[in-house]
Length: 418
Image 1 (cartoon, rainbow, N blue to C red):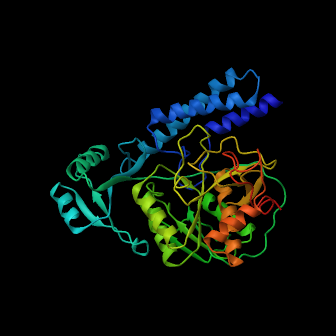
Image 2: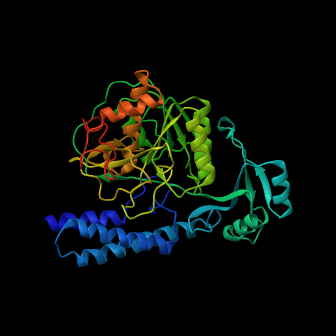
Image 3: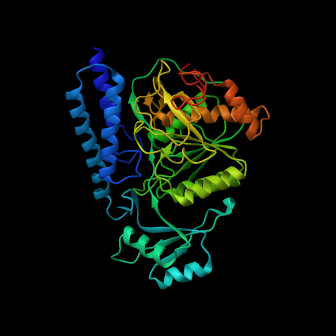
């Protein structure tokens, strides 16, 4: 029986599902080429085998590697299914086709890129962050890699990037513990940047940052329902996916942050992961300098995966997940730092049809920590006091003191499992 459980856990590690309507099941960490992702998965499998003890798991490892290749095939299928919207950039990650982002756009630079044959469209919707950016349309017949190489060579002092796609970091339909309930009402508004939220979960505001949105998704609805279960009463929901295959881009997330900054929402939860991106990094920094506390999941690609973003950006509260026995999820990813753990399995949330189902993943831990941050603000804490309050509330797990597995401890241990 023990061996069977471990086999199932290993299989789950290799193929985390993406529970977002209209989005295929693909990997959540996209900061590598396909070959690089395969290598990371093989490393993750090897390290996992080291942890499970002296069992004969050679056959399961082969199976896991086959699942890993299937996962890469699904990513390839996703790209092939949407050739008009998605292509790989110079680092191999899926990004919006034919679009280059220019950070710090000024009239002189826009004139220069037009002379190189690129269309230049100033980006709207970043005003509250004080950012100026532009979308550059790539000339016909040129791919993103060639476009970025040309722009960087011609204008070496400027920052150009693709607009990479981010993916949700959790799955739905897993095993669930019985029971539900809500924590004490939290008055402070909490923002969430995710898929759309179904009407079954009341939100105070919603806005779309992708074509066809707002559009109810299982993942976004589950995140919002967990926030409410933890006591949130005011939720601002940004749908960055809509019905767009190119949804979840760095630009869409930055625009959502600008909306929430303008509305003075003090806490924002992001349960998405992707590669580092200069525009999104600037947006996160600008939002933080204006008083926003951002909470983000570390993803579900295992401890051998590259660091997940936006959780890895400085001053973002990075959150991992634990199961019902307070064991870190075997598939939990990593960030460049780790702040807290929260429940990420053995609990239920609502899906887009308003039905309870089991959820699993660090996606579902992040909104619980965001709720505790908002609760601290309810008591009058500023950003510095908020961190101290969360530290005092956190229950130490693992080895004594802060560690790389649980951060500074477990928050909201019971609020989502009542």
